[in-house]
Length: 342
Image 1: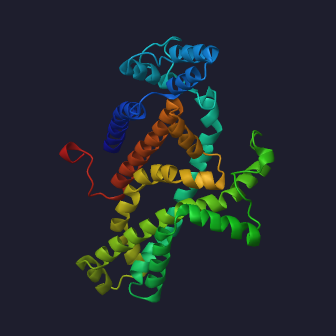
Image 2 (image 1 turned 45 degrees about the vertical axis):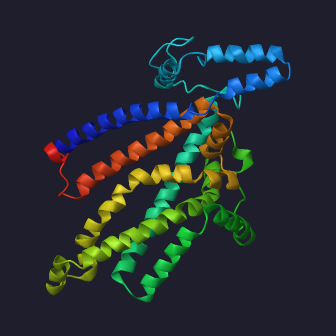
Image 3 (image 1 turned 90 degrees about the horizontal axis):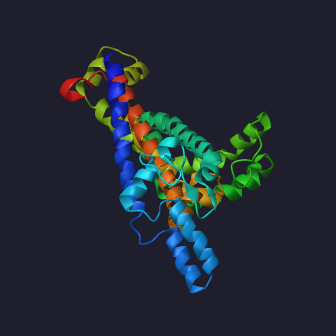
C-alpha cells in the first residue's frame, strides 16, 4: 500500500512538472523574434504578394498568434478557448505545422511509434551489452578481459554516431546485405501492420539500434564497472568469500544489487537522451522518426510542431524518471518512500 501511495505521489508530481515544463518550452520556442507566419508575411510584402499576405494574416488570427503570449500559451495548452473553442494539447489537438502545411498529428502520427520503437530497441541494446560487460570487467579486473572491455568502451565513446552510421551503412550493406536507410521497405509505408512489414522493420532496426546505443552502452558499462569495483572492495564481500560462498552467487546477491542502483536510475535520462541524440543519426540514416521533423521545425520557427516534439521528449523523461524511482524502491530496501525520506 505504501508503494501504491508513493507511485500516486510520483504521478501527481510528474503531471505538475510536465505543466511547468510546457510553460518553459512555450517561452523558449517564442524567444527568437517573430514566428513562421510573421517571417513569411515580411517576405511576401517585400515581393508584393498582397493576396498571399491576407491568407497568412488569416492563419495568424485562426491560430491566435495575434494574441498576447500568455493567452497563446493557454490556448495552445487547451486551458482557454481560442477561435474554435477549447482545442489544445489537453483536447488532443497538437496544432498546425506551417512548414509542412498539415496538422501536427498527421506529421508525427506515424513517426511517434517508430521513434519509440527505435529508442526502446537502443535501450535494450544498451542494457544487454553494458550489464554483462560491466560485471565481467569488474570481476576480472586488471586482466585482458578488463582491458578489452575498457578499449571497446572508449572506442564507443570516442566514435561519432554519424560516422559510425556511415561506416555500418557501407560495410553492412556490402558484406551482410543489410538495407540502406529508412525503417522499413518503401513498399510497406502507409500499409497496415503485417508479418512481412514487421520483418522488414526488424531488419532495418539493426544498424540504427547499434549506432544509437553504442555510446550509451559504453558509458553505462564504465559506470557499472566502477560501482562494482567499489562494492567488491568492501568488508562484506571478504566475509562472503571467507564463508565459501560461490563467486557467481556472491556477485549476484550482494555487490551487483547495490551497484545496480545507478543503472536503474539512468532509465530516466536514457530515453530522452536517445531521442535527442538520434536526431543527426536519423537524418544520416533517413529514419522516419520525429528527429528530422524537429530539426526542420526549429530551423523554420514552426512553433506548434517544435513545441509538441519537445513536450513528447519531456514526457519520456518524466515517465522514465518515474519508472526508475519505483524500481529503485523495489530494488533497494534502504530507499524509503515515506515521511521525510520520500
